[in-house]
Length: 327
Image (cartoon, rainbow, N blue to C red; front, side, top):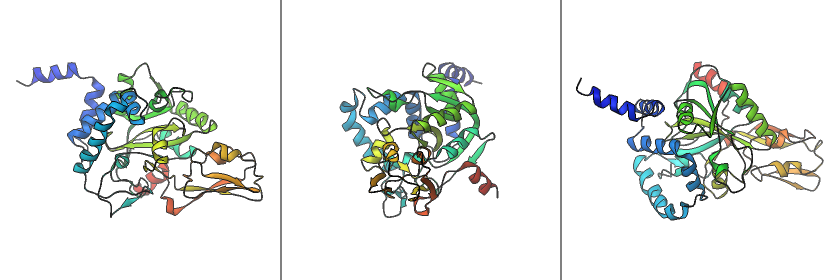
């Protein structure tokens, strides 16, 4: 009974969503006190966090040396498992835990992205190593999956001339949705599953890529779908600079030369620079193609299609994964 006043005082000072986040963290395996603090800072101040990470925030240059030093020291001391190699897969010969291993996205075509916001039951897929080829942050554990928040994208918001609209980041499930809603009421709104699908479809039409994001500090699991463009997205720009922050969808684009007229529309829509027109037909660079499917939906000639590519990993197709785990 002596601890009751202190506990009540704590409850008065800490918001319900923060308590729920910390409580869930206490039940999560391999989730350290550092992870808990990291996750709180990331979710509480995402615009500062992402702004510094992309180098767009005014204090980014001042903090860059300190952040670089912390990145080199802290992650490696917390995990000695193999890290992701340049192709995003676990490399047993690499023992350094990198930034990308704990914060990364899985490319998901529109249909797969829609599954993540329309599932109507709790989901527990704790380890998807074959699908999410990173050391940490590779589980899908959805509590209240119909709790969805549309958040103003921190990456876009940090840019001087961002792509619009801003509220295209989808925070999915608890404790994440309530935390974001409570702490960012002016930059977020509750939406239904059908509204989430409509946002995905509209972003797909704009040529933006869907990424299912995972983060070690966010309880080591999936928490958001971001709709990304190479001009604003920090993860895509890191990928371009050689940091493997994105895993392929598991698909690759394929050209039907009988239908392709070499118009070049696909080269303009590809966010990864994987398409070019050489002569009469479009050509695909299989190393650069991430299987997002944007080129397919924007080809008026229907000359492009998506085909499975085993070397790119397995797709994140939620309903099929649920069936496989149930079986």
